Image 1: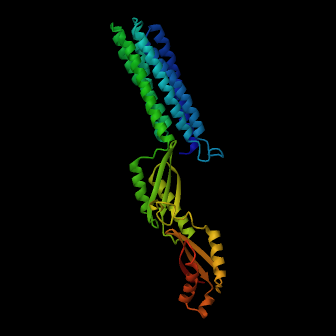
Image 2: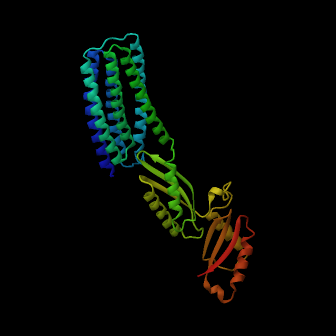
Image 3: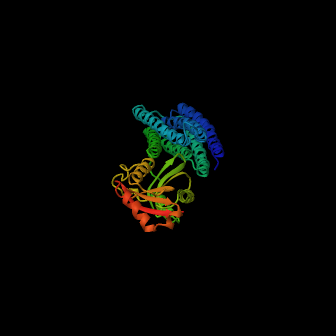
Length: 378
């Protein structure tokens, strides 16, 4: 789904939720005070907390929908993750306050007033919040938003807490006044629990936890089946907001041209995105050999191309080599530099291929770090 449409859908669902949360919170807190029900007041505070989560969800959806920029070249999706973590902390604080208040009411239990109105308010909350849950979770699935899904579950916990409140009010109305406080404490615990769940998932994403192992297994198999890919190694994945990213090393024939290697990397990226839904960013490393099996960096002491060519040129000059090298190609394999020399086909008029190859090989084999020599004519 396009990021603009995704943002609009998320914000629309959030605004609808905010309106309902505001109305419910006013009704529950007002009736809770009038009817002296700590459970209903706690439930109303829960709905007030939903207002804040709705606002954070709306704002995070706005930020995460923005295109990548100079400061955030990988996009703004993790604003959703940070917002989710913030919501979890806030919910834990709210739940703790409600629990302490509930324990305080044990020693000061009062008979409830207007029990029918209290029950009606809680019942209205159950119906409206459950309906809001189903609407929000449907939108969350359509746009694949974990933050919106989390907000949907926040709506459902409000419905669950209202059920507990109804039980507490009915119990208190029949003389078991402590049940109202028990209901308030249970609501507080539920709020803390959902906060912990949200925070745990957000934290896993922020520390770059991998995607589902089964998805990784399927991705590994799909990439290994690509023609031209000899093996797949160092496959790393992570979640970034509602999207996913992957970093993969694939081994190919070490003597392929750069353009052939590039085409294979394009195929790897395409297949990866087809295999994993919401895989948005794929970084492909083309390797001539399996560097995962190397204990140390085998090439760290070898000269890079410019220096290697200079060493070869100086050696040919010192050995009074009479051949004019038109082009030199280097292959860094098995911990050494393999050298391909390209000469004019005119040299074949008076020389054997084996003679030319022997002469050049004798010069190069004296150089530390250099390996096999091959000669080509064009």
